[in-house]
Amino acid sequence: MTALNLLHAAAAHFPVAAEHLALVNAMALDSAGYPAQQPDGETLLATPQVRLHQRLLTPDECAHIALSAQELLEPSQVVDPATGQMIAHPIRTSDAAVIGPTRESLPMQALQRRIAAFARLPVDNGESLTVLRYRPGQQYRQHLDTLPHTTNQRVATVIIYLNEGYAGGQTRFSESGLTVAGQGGDALYFANVDDQGRPDPLSAHAGLPVDAGVKWVATRWIRAATHDVWNPR
Image 1 (cartoon, rainbow, N blue to C red):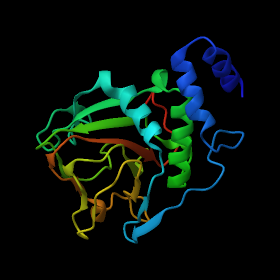
Image 2: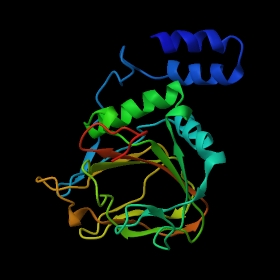
Image 3: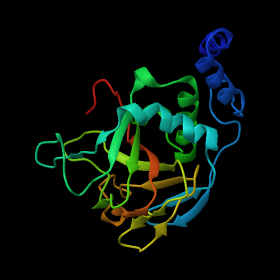
């Protein structure tokens, strides 16, 4: 409540704080900042588990995320399986921005709790939210979201589709053929590991090329245990 009280005080003097307060006031939250009702969604696939929640976020919330990342966008990178370092690679041709803890507004904190509730995993297990922008022709070819050389694996992924009005850009699960064309505010959850905690090849997926317009998504990768963004492992 201290943070909310500070936001109330700031909103009287600063337009940005007033915008943030309006976003928070429009959310149905419990005292800890989690959604008052559990968001579940529709199961699209059993193995690996894939669930879709339509309109998990409002248009204003999606805009807040996109605008928070816009000035940070740079060409996307991937993890080098040999070294564990981030490198450029033609498999992934989008632009990306990470909204780290120093840029997490109070609305962003509440949205992360909503994403965690939808994923049914602790909010502290999540990596910083990554925003991706795909222009025409850009894509993310078939891949797994799991990581090499880690003791705290990415067990799940949540993709938030931030806009609509573009063509192409669907999320396709290669093994099952399931293809999801999310609308603005939709959230897609899927498991990345099997029952033994091992990377699940059935979770291989691709972000298909955008044919027209610009696609914006936000991705939150969720680890098996608490994830320290200042000391990742």
